[in-house]
Length: 239
Length: 225
Image 1 (spheres, rainbow over the protein chains, first blue to last red):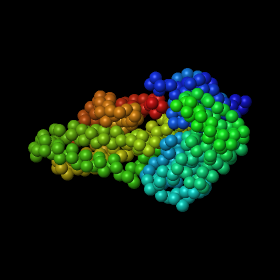
Image 2 (image 1 turned 135 degrees about the vertical axis):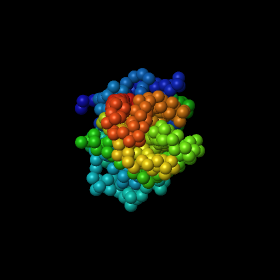
Image 3 (image 1 turned 90 degrees about the vertical axis):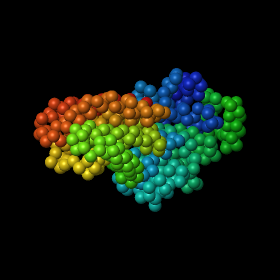
Image 4 (image 1 turned 90 degrees about the horizontal axis):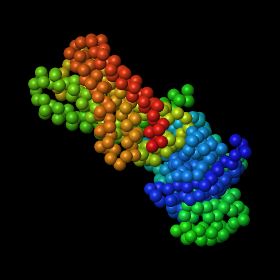
């Protein structure tokens, strides 16, 4: 399994009620690599992440995480995956600490109070550990969702718009966390519109347009302006 | 150990959120009170009529309040985007199901205890002498109600017409439990020993085991949608 790419997508297609969202998409992400996934609204970024996270089934083609098929071996995929999607997965009537305790225990990786407080401190929520999430802003809920990442040992991390609603400090923490995952040999796929933020952590930039892979290039070869120009060009093509 | 811990954490979360919000408990309490007023008006002061109808009324109250409570069992997961989290948590999903069943069981038994006390007051029925056997029947019947209700609540959680579909699906499946529970309640309220209702209790126990087994085996698929 070690020779397998962390993420492999081959000839992937997805249609919802006759509307094609992904078309013949092929992509690989190696261990220790961060891929920034860009695309306009409706380009298929979230659908791709949902297929990789085993939350949606492809209409055609294959998707695999750590060598495990996302449809036939969903449980094995889930055991190796960390996901922060659009939903924050927080219970409003639990405190921040209790929310983290719940999700880590449910994942079979119960963490001690020190580890939970450290994860909350990492996203600057340690002083709010005992507050009910009902009182949190959207950005604070997002930070709490990201705090789960600090407690996971996932080999593959999927992030959908992770910078949305984050303040500078939390965004910086996330970038450091991504670097940490990468250094530990993990792989990250990060879908975002805030490419200024994501680019600094990325090894590769992939742009989706109209459900197709319009660009897949090393991040080092692209300046933020290049990425913006390419993004706008392909967004127009895909529209 | 991990399985039990995962079931426990779901139960802990459900009990804690309900204890803090009291959304379902408050709604069920007023619903139960309303039911009792309606029953009181329908039956009047005739003690013979009340005595004959009591077992059925009691379970009607339990089932109707159960439908309201169970229908909300996965509401918090749906509204707060936590369904995906439950689905993606690695491991056997039946632990989530058992935790949910236990949470619903505690909630329903709490409401039933309140209902029972209100029945005794409203209808002036001496329930104390039969309380032990009655409690055994109620617990056994409620396990079945919670087991199948939790499964169906999960099945209909994402359906648009879930408020209609949930009772329509649930009530026919509950017939064996309701039949056994009403008959066994009738026997214990008549002062007969629990053993006299052995066959009915056996029917409820068999239904409980069947519902729990089906829930454990199929919850994985139900959660996947």
